[in-house]
Amino acid sequence: MAGYDGAVETSALSDQDTHQNALPEGAAGKNPSGRAMPGSGGEMRAKPNLHRFANPGRFLRIAGKIVPPVAVAGILITAFALVWGLFYAPADWQQGDTVRIMYIHVPAAWLGSMGYASLAAASAASLIWRHPLADLAATEISPVGAMFTAICLATGSLWGKPMWGAWWVWDARLTSVLVLFFLYLGHIALVRAFDDPQRGYRAGAILALVGVVNLPIIKFSVDWWNTLHQTASISLTGAPTMSTEMLWPLLWSAIGFTLIFIALVLTRIRAAVMERRIRALLLANAARAEQGNIP
Image (cartoon, rainbow, N blue to C red; front, top):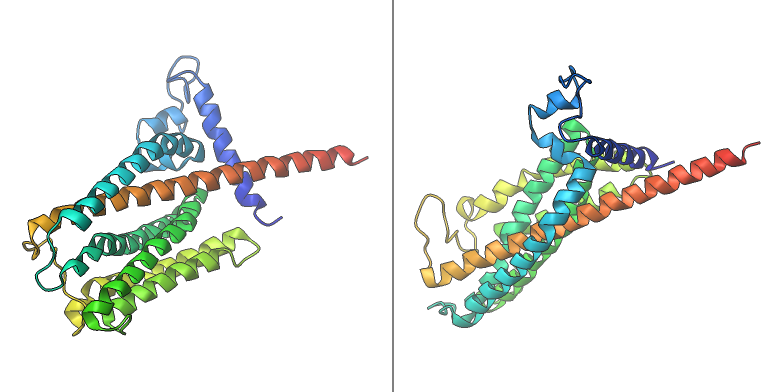
C-alpha cells in the first residue's frame, strides 16, 4: 500500500525510542556487568550528535515543550513591535506614514527567504540520511513559507501603489520573490503528486535544492540591476541607513515573526508525526484482523 513503508518506518522508530526510555537510566546498551557493549546505544550516547533529535518520539516530547512558550512569546513580541511601529515610530520624511507597512513587509520578506533556506536544508538531510522526519519537516515548512511570502508580496503591492503609482511592476526584486512563491507552491504540489510518498519526497527535495539558486538573486537583485526597489537599509558590513527609532521596532517585529514561524512549523511537524503514528497503528490492526480472518 502507498505510504505503508513510511508509516511503518516512523512507527518502528517511535517504538525504538519508547524501548530505550523504558530501560533504567544508564542501563541501555550495557551488559550485566555494567560495561557498554560494542556498537550499543550506551556507546553511541558517549558521542552525542544531532541525529538523536531526529527520533520522532523524542522530537514530539521536545517540540511539545518548546512550542507553547515560543508561540506565546512570538505573539506578544509581534503585537508589541507592531503597536510600536504603527503608532509610535516616526514617519519617513519622504514616504510619510506609508513606510509603516515595512513593519510587516520586511519581516515577512526575511522569513520567505529564510523559510526556503530551511526547506532546502531539510531536503538535503532527506536525500543524504533518508530520515522520514526530514521529509516531514520539508513538507510542513513549504505552506508556512508560502504564507509569509504571500504576505510579503501583498504588503509590497500595497506599499508600491502610492510610491510607484502601480500595484505591480516587473522589477528584479519583485519578480524573484514571485518566483520564490511559485517554488513554494511547486514543492507543495510535487510532494503530493505521487501515489508513493517517497517518490514525492525525493522529487520535492530535488526541486527545493535547485530553487536555492533564487535566494542570492533575491538578495542581490537590487545591487546587480537598476531596480525601483530600494537597496538594503540594514547591512552586516555597514551602519543602518534608517533612524534607530524606526530600526528597533523593525528588529523586534522580525524577532516576533520568526518565533511565530518556528511555532507554526513545529506544530505542523508534530501533527504530521502523530498522523503517521495513527496511520501505522490502523494499518497494523487491519493487517492483524485480515490474518485472523484467514482460515
